[in-house]
Image 1 (cartoon, rainbow, N blue to C red):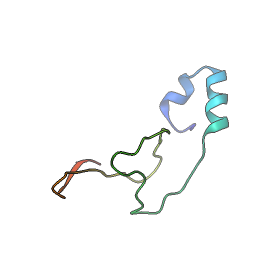
Image 2: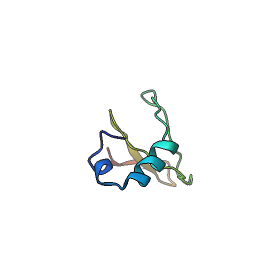
Image 3: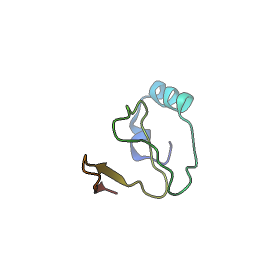
Image 4: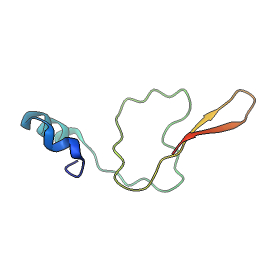
Length: 67
């Protein structure tokens, strides 16, 4: 977390709380993190690589929203 610009601007208590609950994970390339309609209960902080966000339409077509 310390590599993010916002971290140094947090109050000490907030830094401690964030570090207490944060989990570092290496995600394999191509792994699907969420499916359309899933409830995202976490915040992801990307430190390396990129994430592709796709919207699946009812007709089966996929549209790339952003990287």
